[in-house]
Image 1 (cartoon, protein in one colour):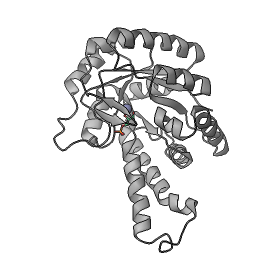
Image 2 (spheres, protein in one colour):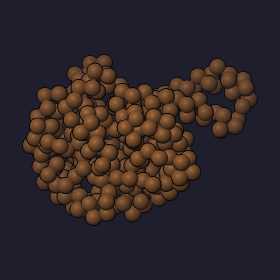
Image 3 (cartoon, rainbow, N blue to C red):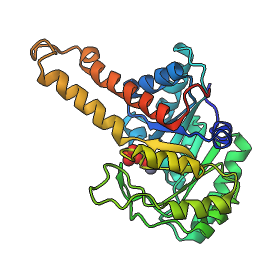
Length: 287
Ligand code: G3H
Ligand code: ZN
């Protein structure tokens, strides 16, 4: 069964650890994430971007596949299926499709419009028992067509959005989607501290989890981050393992064509990356 992310994040905030959101792209990604969460006895949030939803033929397919896998793999840890960086229309599509958690990314709207739309969706999600994530400021870089300018969130605006009845709040604090550039200035812990002081118990979300050094992750968790999103890192390790398998001729010297064998090294690499992140975030054994 899918669950809302609200409860798992409240527990994470109180217990000073973070739950990982791992983005999925297909059956292998979903299965790898679910099995790793079960092995680690960790709660997990499966993130689905609008692009990935489209790739997997639609949100209904994603929701039904995930629910069936949870049942047939006997997954007992809490799993939330979460729309990542959703548009206003995308949020309603995922609610209809059976997702248990939604992110409305209104960060590119003027704050008044972000407030208005977030408030409406907070009411809808509350009524249906779904969790809602909102965003203030923006995450730099690009993810699946969602481009952010990377402006730092205004803590007062964060407070305004946090008070609308959302369950988790993403704030731009210098984090970037994709690989971090060599000259990256790092996370703005001063801004994060101000946000956490103003928003109190609200679980904060750190996007752009790929490549953030472990000490910064720990400090972010200390300052109230309870959900960390990882996408690119699984793609990088999946691609590297697949490439290595083929280039080393492990696919029967180029003669192998069974997709289940070709995808296995990448599958194992995703499992290893997720496990490593769960250990770093402190969510192992917290289910
Ligand atoms: O929304 C998803 C993420 O913020 C993931 O970011 O691709 O840099 O790990 P990443
Ligand atoms: Zn993101």
